[in-house]
Image (cartoon, rainbow over all chains, first blue to last red; front, side, top):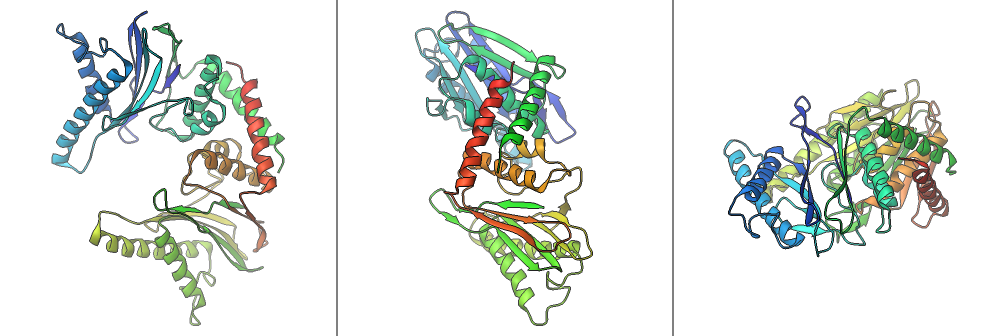
Length: 230
Length: 230
C-alpha cells in the first residue's frame, strides 16, 4: 500500500500553517497502521490525542487501545467512535456562538499479523467503507483535481513503484490547481504481510526528485496533448 | 473563443435528465453571445425565459434587451441582475417549506461589432468577473476534475484547434470521474471580429471522433505515465 498526504492547513487564506496529516502506529512484525486526516484541525488533533491517550493508558485493553485491537475492522470502529464523539463535542461548542460545524474524515490503512492488509475511509459520523478490487484507492480532502489520473492508472495489479508514481503525479496536479494543498508531502509505503513501515519519506518543497518528476510529467502531458488528433 | 458544456441535470441520482446548458444569441455580423449555465435548473430556465421575453418585447430598448445592449459589460450587468432576482425569488419560495436555497452561475461569452471579444463568469448574486491574459479560461459547475489539463495547456496563445482539444479532453476527464456530468456535449467556436458562430457541434454519446480522441488520450496518458521515472 502507498499512502500520501500533504501538510497544509488553512483557516482562511491568511492563516496557512503546516501540520502533519499522517500518523503511523507500529509494532514491527505484529501490526502497522497509518492514519491520515482531512477536515477541521481541532477535530483531528483531539481525535489523535484521545487515541494516543488510550494507547498510553497502563490499563489499556483490546477494546480501548488501537494497538491492542484484534482486527483492522475493530480499529476502524474504535477510531470512528472517537471521531464522531469529538466532532459532536466541538460542533456543540461552536454552535453556542455560531452556525459553524466541525467535522473531519480519516483514512486508516494497515495490517495486523494473521489478518489481511486493509484500507478504510472513515466518515465524520464514524461509519466507514473499505477499499475493494473494484475501488482500489481512497481519497479524502481536496480530491477532485487528482482523481482523473488515479482513475486511469490505478488497478489492483499496479506495482508499488507505479502506485508511488501515480499518487505523486495526482498530488502534483492538485498542488498546481489548488492553494489549500501544499508541500511538504508525507509518503509511506507498506508491504503486504511485513507488518511494518517499508519506507517513509518527507518530500520538502525543494525536493529535486519530485521537481524533476513534476517537470517530466508536464512535458510528457504536453507531448501527449500534441500527439492527440481531433 | 471555444465554449463547451455538457447536458446532464440531476435532482438526486434517480432523476437524471438531459437539458441544453448553452444558449446562443446571434445577429450575424453585429453581435454574437453565448450563455452557458450551471446550478439550479428552475433558476437557469426562469432566467433564460426572462431574458428571451425582454428580447421579444416589441418595446425592447438597449436597457432591457441583451440583443440591443451597447456593450458586453452592459449585457453582463443585465443578465446578472435577472439572475440575482430569479435566485432570490425562488429561494424565498423554497424557504417557506425548507432550508433549501436555489442558485446558479453563468458564463457569458461574446462580441459586439466595434467592441472586444469578451468572456465573463456571472455569480449567483449577479456580480461578475472577466477572463484576462493571466486567466484565459473560465469554468462553472463541476470544474475541478477537468482543471489540471486546462491549467497546463491553455494560454492566450493557444490556437482555436488546440483549445477545442483542451476543452474536450478536460470534459473527458470529468465525464470519467463524475456521474453528474454526461453526454451529449455542446461545442461552439466563435472567431474574433466575425460576430457570428463559426462552428456549432453537438457531440452525442456514440460520437466516433470523440471516442477515438478519448481512447487516444487514454493511451497517450498511460504512455506518458510509463515514461516518467521516479
